[in-house]
View (spheres, protein in one colour):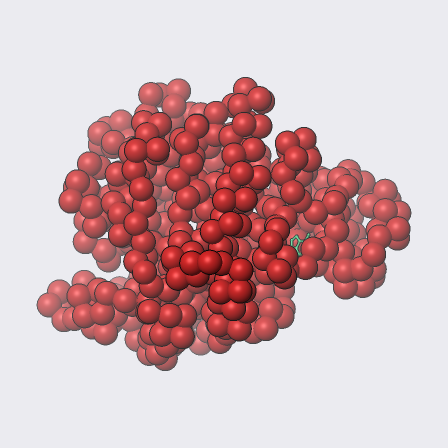
Length: 458
Ligand code: AMP
Ligand code: GLY
């Protein structure tokens, strides 16, 4: 098989790397990819980004199917266009992708199809939003409608903070067209989890559960980001809850989309807030793709053949396969550049990643990070660039270091020990990825789940 993966982040590196492990996969192309994908065997980066170019590439290279990593091409309608050319592509069409590309669409969809979510109102002008704000309790959540790379949401603890954000969106155009509407919603407390599935139009295949860490700083402080680290599984999602989520948050998307005359295919990611007793949940958001960085630990745990899974999805046969997972915890820590997320800086030299010399300068030299020495450590690239065999930061989230172990502590140890080797000026990372799992989730799962070990390994 020849597979094309679209995107350039850590998620796409993880997807492409996993695909190369399939005996059936001859070559993975990543458009445009990053130095991490460039350095992997069986992967080739292709410098393409326009949909038309990608269609031509898929045709001329006999690509068996294409996987869309990020949301932007979905928003542009890449799936519709590929299908119009009879090319196989894994992802939802433009209509269905509105679940992610418009928070107002997603909230109205959830309300219409009785999916549990926080109470909300949608506004198209600042004055109405300000008036409504004055009638609401604090904290309060303000969301720009469109895509904003994880930065369009503010959990405000004061009216002034909320009002300033509304002004930023409507008066100062902080998010451009993404700020044409604003959703103001009730604050929901609890524990977050990421619940990602594959949908082939009628069948659901749940992937391993995971938990992201959205805030920049330790103890969930600082601004929201695209995600600073994640672990899988998320034990808070016990067997009962898992079933409930499928019934109330995933199946209604398939059914609701059908009612709207649309068939949902692709990954679907429900960002959930689970109540403290872990009995119930609300959907905070949908994403129409895999999560970043959740994908990185999830792929490390995946034992099944990802190419087979996608192939089954494209043939509406997800009911005929299963996904098997390592009975271990995987934990990814994001190393972000100086200034992330507001003012990311580029061009800081990165040292300690000797996998570059293994691949580029001395192919026989193995390093502590090469899979051959320790299959339980893997480093995925995102915001990096290679200049004459040297690696530099290229803004945003730079690397994701994933460790795997029998429990969260072991996975933490693996990841954080590896991080000690890596250096670049202004490197920012959280030191507490996985602590919440140790502190609350394990206990929560054990308290409510009759078979906690199995449940925790989903
Ligand atoms: P979203 O992009 O909608 O998932 O929001 C980003 C982050 O903001 C979430 O991961 C939560 O941490 C937080 N958040 C969003 N909506 C709410 C809410 N209604 N109550 C509490 N926190 C929220
Ligand atoms: N990690 C959150 C996201 O991928 O949107």
